[in-house]
Amino acid sequence: MLRTLSLIATIGIAALSSIAVAQEASIVVNADQGKVKISRHIYGHFSEHLGHCIYGGMYVGENSPIPNTNGVRNDVIDALKNIKIPNLRWPGGCFADEYHWMDGIGPKENRSRMVNTHWGGVVEDNSFGTNEFLNMCEELGCEPYICGNVGSGSVEEMSKWVEYMTFDGESPMANLRKQNGREKPWKVSFLAVGNESWGCGGNMTPDFYAQNYRRYQTFCRNYGDNHLLKVAGGANVDDYNWTETIMKNVPLNQMWGLSLHYYTHPGGWDNKGSATQFTDEKYVETLKRAHHMDELVTRHDAIMTKYDPKKRVALVVDEWGSWYDVEPGTNPGFLFQQNTMRDAMIAAITLNIFHAHADRVRMANIAQIVNVLQAVILTDGEKMILTPTYHIFDMYKVHQDATALPISVNTPDYTKGKFTIPQVSATASKDANGVVHVSLTNVSLEKSIKVSVDIRGMKTKTASEAQLLTAKNIADHNTFDEPHTIELAQFSDYKLKDNVLTVTLPAKSVVTIAVK
Ligand code: AHR
Image 1 (cartoon, rainbow, N blue to C red):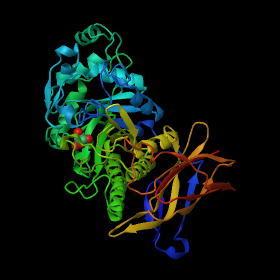
Image 2: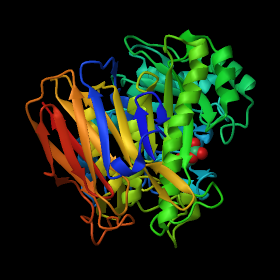
Image 3: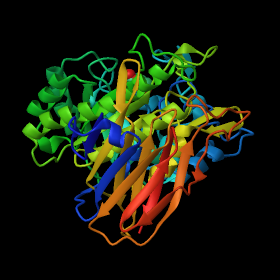
Image 4: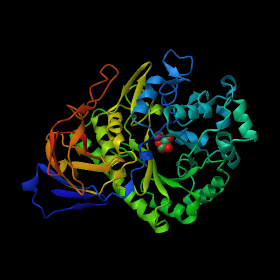
C-alpha cells in the first residue's frame, strides 16, 4: 500500500495502486510555507551518574593519562562540539532524585561518598559535581539542563542550588561558590523540577506532583539576567491523565515546559533483546515502536492545546532512544549497549517526528550521551568510538534552528512478519541563508528506492553537499577494533531538474542533501 505522511498527520491512501508505484516514493516540500523554527534544543543530550556515562566516559579527572581539559576527555569534547550539542541534562534520571548537590562541591577529598542505589549499587565519590558539570558545559558551548531533586530533596535544597549556580552578589550560596573557586555565576537556562515523579522520583500521583511542582518552582528564582526555563515532570509514555492533570493544575506562567519519556524497547520492557542480534521482523518492530513517538507527541500535544492553545508550554521529550539488553558480560545496572544501523534509523525517524511537531516539541534529550543506552559515543579506557547514532546527529545538525518546511510523503509500506511501517520517511528545513536541507530515510533491507522531491515555492539552482549513512548489514556497528565500519560518506546518486530533486536511496540508508 502507498501511504502519505504529512507534516501533521499520516493518511493512508488506499485508493492508489500499489503496483504502479511500488518502488517509488514522491515527496512535496513547500519551501515558502515554513512557519515554525526547529529548536536546536531538540538535539539535546542526557548525562546521568549511571555506569560509565560520567566517570570514564566523559570525566576522567585532571590526573588521568587520557588527554583532558579540567578532567573532561578531549576526544569527547571535540566530538560533541562537532555535532553542536545544544544542551546537556544532568545529573539524572532516577539518580537526580537521590542526589544532594552539596555532596558534590568543595575540595574533592572532603566530598561525601554515597551508594548509587539505582545504578549498580556502586560507590559515587561525588568527584564530578556542580562546578565540574557547569564548567564542562561552558567548554562544550552548550546550555546546562539541571534536574533538581523533588523525590528525596527539599524546596530549600533546590532553591539554594539555583542560588549557588546563578546569583551574582553577596549571599550565603554565592559566597560558597566563590569559596569554591568560581567568582561569577554560570548561566543556567533549563531546570527540571524532579524526574519521573510517577516512578523512581517518588511514586507520586499527578495531583500530588502538580502541587509540589507549584511550590518547588516558586523558590527557584531568576537572579540578575539569568532566566530559568522550568520544566515540570511529565508523563510516562501514554499516561495522558498525567499530562491532563498537570496542565489543569499548574498555571501556564509557572512552567516553560512539560516533559515526556518514551523509550523504544523492541519487544516491550520484558523482552528487549540484543542490540546487535535481531531478526528482520524484530528490526521492523523496533522501527514501528520508534514511529509510535508520533502518536504520543500528537496526543499529548492535543491535551496541552486544550489548556494552552497558543502553545506557550513546550513538550520536552527529555528521555528518548532505544533500550536493549545490556551487552553480555557487562554490569546489568550500567545499561551499556552497542549501537547499530538500526539505531541510526531510530534516530532519524524520531528527529523527523520532532521536526514535524516543532511548534510543540521544543526540546528533547536522547538517552544517554556516552556509554549508556542509545549513546552517541562509546569509550573503553583511552579508546573512543562514534556510533551510527552520532553520525545521524552530525548529518542532521544542519536542521538546528532552521525553519521546518511543510512536507508530504507518498511512500510504499515495508512489511516483515506482523509489522508494517512506511518505507520512506523524510523531513525538510530552510536555514537562515535560505538553503533547504532534505533528509530521507529508506528502511528497506533489500531494495533501493527512487524518490522524487518536488520543491515548491522556491527557484532551485543546485543540489549539493549530499551525505549518506548506510551499512552492509543492518546490525553492523562500530567497535573499538573497527571504529569506522559505519560513518558518513559522500553521496552522488541524485539530480536536480525543474525544481524536482530525484534521489535513488540505497537500501537501509539515510541521506541529507542541500538545495539552493
Ligand atoms: O535513562 C535511564 C533511566 O530511565 C533514567 O534514569 C530514568 O529517568 C528512566 O527511567
